Length: 323
Image (cartoon, rainbow, N blue to C red; front, side, top):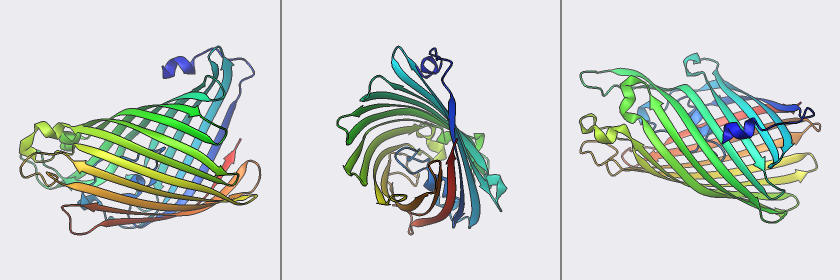
């Protein structure tokens, strides 16, 4: 369906538009920085299992470049918009954690109130850190590397001029390097989103996701490493226009992972994980096409079988420009 929408006939007047963005971050934990960055209702909030030994990896400065290109045209279905987005994470002192993602998207507007949004997200060779090799006969720590493939669809309906609802469904694959192949996971997600303009200067966003993930480790009890789960994710964000060219963005996210392993000896058997995250961003509209912004993120992760929680703090400043 995504390919069909991308290749519908388009008029010669259709043009590409784009947006470039760059953010410079300081993070106090490179091990979970990218997971914290993706914990949003429009991102990939249900991250793969992160063992505690992968956290507390020290601080670093991270540059996050982001480039989006978009094209729209009219057709017999209505109006089609396709875009491609590339995002990177470049670490100043720990380059082995460098990685990038690619997103392809098609939006079909059937009328002013109804849209279908299709998306493919690809995140190859993400280094999670050095972890225990549980394969038979192996000992010691080796790199844990993950590649994610996620397909999603959203049906979006404008109920009134101030209220929009969406229904999200997605299916994904998480594939690991051979040393952690038992963690290969297939998952699916469903959930509603709501955007409500409460007042001319106040916009509220709400979202909930239910997700089920099944890992290969559930069929390999000898490894005692089943990361299958049931996930509940809730998110709320508030967009406040303080002045004509100044906005404040606030967001709160909560995630509950109920691990479903039934393997005796698996530390996740009967366990769960709670993640709480908040963020604040101040945005300054410099010109019609240029914005400056700065913000702070803090997350708290706690496994039921661990004594202490894991925190992550990120401070960032950035600039975006449309062209």
